[in-house]
Image (cartoon, rainbow, N blue to C red; front, side, top):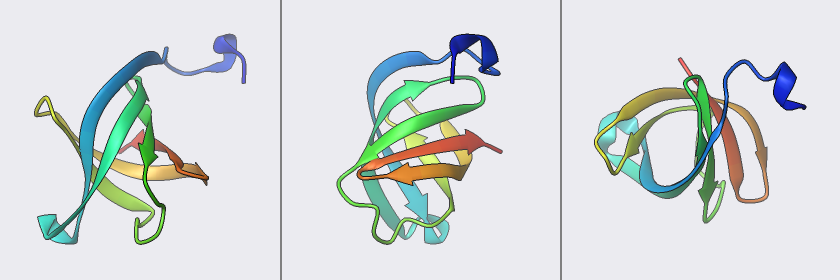
Length: 81
C-alpha cells in the first residue's frame, strides 16, 4: 500500500508494550514497531494464544483497545477501536 492510500501517517518507533487479555490476568510482551493515530504494528515472540481483540498497554502509560487486521510470522498489525 502506498503512502497516499494510508488513512494516517505511520511513525516508526521502537517502544515496549504488553498485549493484555483476560481482564489483565494474562499478558504478552511486544515491541511497537510503528504507530499511527489509528493503529500499530507489533512484534511478538509467538502468535500462539494472542486473540483477535486485546488491549495494548505501552510502556509510556498509553493504552489502546485493538483488533487484529493481519498476522504474519511474529508480527501483528492492529487497528485501534
